[in-house]
Image (cartoon, rainbow, N blue to C red; front, side, top):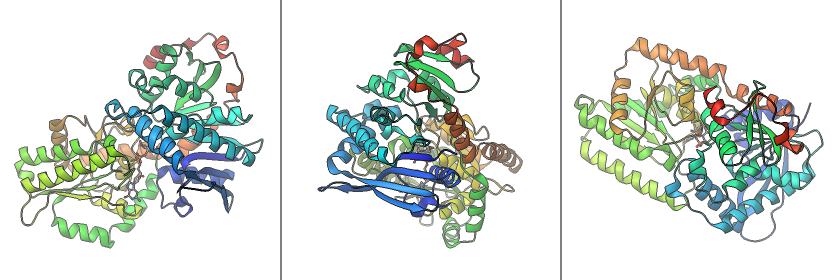
Length: 486
Ligand code: GDG
């Protein structure tokens, strides 16, 4: 069996390799344990001087290989191009996009350098699975170093529509780099379609859907494959975790402060893509219009800090602090604070137990690749008395979770209406919606995501290495538009 090599910007701290960590870490770590393999990436350390050295640690069948970044590399590759250019653009926030040519050079330089660090650790039979937007040029860099192994890529965030991607100056270089992978995985069909649209309309490539499996893409002299692989969770493990925590102290404390009021709950990294300001305003609108809900419902927003050294993240923090203070000032009573806004991280087991307590899971990103919180909230519910998920149509999860109340996150009145409906939804309807969503989550759990991707990568037959792809686009070739309607 081939050895699996996972490459991601950050390697999950080893103590997080168990079930205590999030979906991606658990799913990937499980695959590594089954096949044996290596997880390679940045350690999270930033050096001001010296020379980063790879640290290799063995944990059973899994090798963790991590390396620090130099300060300039961190600034250009991570803070700069990855998080100030790609992240906003791929989340349709061209207004927040900051571009600096030197950052892009740094991004390519760090990808090439990381690839060179990995090369001596590789064996001939290894299959390499690269994760996320920080590492788009990674396969190109490995190929330049002579690596012939199969290399797949999974994008955890949305792939934007061409007109938005065109706002990133080196858009062509990025898509060309993506075409050096053997297999590309996207979260949803709309992301895949957006990629195909760029290939056909901006790169003069072709898309061949005739195999019935992953699409065959011919562009920039490469042939590669691409498909949607929606990431999942382990719903039954989350349900167990939630149930176990039900009588724990955090839940008892929360229930005591609620005094039998209903609870609306959200958990997000504090990121402008998560639609937090609009969400707060829709809760305000609920209190404004549905006056019977005043003093009958509280809203808990847990928002751990992230990328706090970027201006856009400092701005969103200030904005939220202002909004929560304003709304609480407007509606609070001596015995009731409408919004409980917490800017820190909690243990996974505590979150799961709190989800089970919440009557409404309020998940309304402006854009999100998938959004695991939506899936975790549903998983954590008591099937006898489940809560209701209010979900943005722009979260990838909305493509699968039909049982949610689907909202447009900029429609403040629409979201307030959905909250009111969720709070008053009859038990039988809540149960039916929950049953449907749990069936979906079980069928597409994180093992299925991983196994489907690995199966297609194993059979992708290293086609990228066959040049002259365009000539191979045979009958059955479809344009992205045809793929879109098929
Ligand atoms: C990216 C894409 C895609 C959050 N707060 C705490 C905590 N979390 C956990 C959640 C969940 C994870 O972090 C967040 O995952 P999301 O999917 O919601 O969002 P991103 O971080 O933006 O993830 C996203 C994902 O990759 C996977 O492909 O779905 O679209 O943007 O698991 O529960 N965990 C703990 N304490 C917290 O306070 N322990």
